[in-house]
Image 1 (cartoon, rainbow, N blue to C red):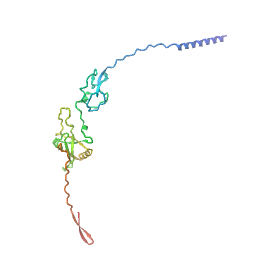
Image 2: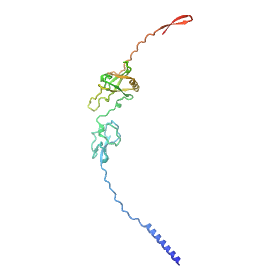
Image 3: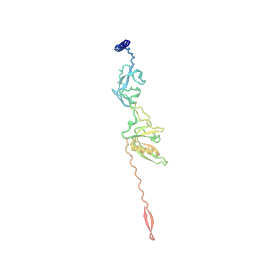
Image 4: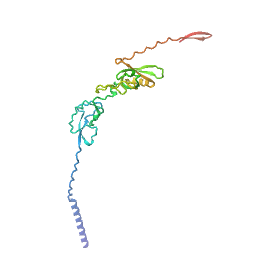
Length: 267
């Protein structure tokens, strides 16, 4: 009898536990109130002048090369060109030259624009030729009157003190004198110093690769001077005639043949 009662109690407890588990699993999840979104203030933007396409150095700006784009105000650098509405006309900038290259989308630096193309010495060198500099003074450059685009002969003076000299290169073009390449276009033809003057400096000439080797070898063990030519005289110097050959000297000798001395003439 007691066993039946205990068995009944165990069955009742198991049934109650199963019912509780079922109720817990089928209970709907409580609704969680959605958190209100946090609204961040929009970042302030301005219009910045940039290159619309890749622009090389010394390029003349044309329509479509530059334009306005929106830019975060907190990332604007001091050299940026800024507009509040992006409607500022750009026609005044067209025709200016860039002093450096720009990538597409890169902000433009107004300080790197100029009204004249900045010329490099490499722009003046004829294709296939080379620019070579040599140390000079006023005394070795026709009194300092050698100027850009003159033509000169280069003379090598023997460094041993013998005073001998010879022309090693003829009719070569002067590309630069000191740091000057002559008058700069767009600066009201303002004369820049082109002559050597009284202070030693350098003259840069235009040579073929073979001539550059000759000049380097001559400059290594001798002193160089420049002889100024007229601009219209670009022909090479006539060859110097060779001195006449001296008549061969003949000598008389005697050769012993047997017991007799026989005379012979030799050169």
